[in-house]
Length: 168
Image 1 (tube, one colour):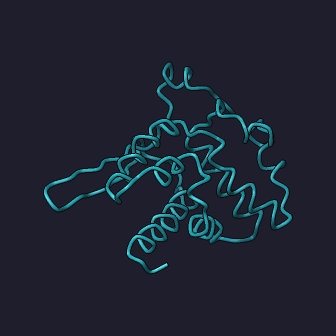
Image 2 (cartoon, rainbow, N blue to C red; image 1 turned 90 degrees about the vertical axis):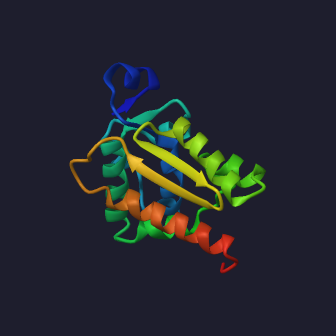
């Protein structure tokens, strides 16, 4: 079920912008898997994927991602998408990837933009002299394991760190 940001402010529900699932939808299209039945389970449509104003609760997003992996018969779908994502075209990273002049600035810009894309996760970038620590944590305890969501970020950040180290 789609909601808007104003509803989150009223209910306190952790939300994620639905359009962030677009790389999954594109990959399923590429594999010949129809995403419509998955979206319809949540009263959503493909058109909703292109609207920047449509948010879903975090648990619904996790269920959508799990259903997409199941429909693709690929338990590693999210890792693959994370590893191959064009960060210049994905809203959470596009500005950071385009405009950052350092690794630290990249994570600062990413953390700032992530807050506009989801209220379910908080990012923390802590710098102390020559060291920096980046953390992401959920602001709620999910009732089910968000395996595909976590796998996506493992693939994504693993690839980013490899590229920054000159290994990709």
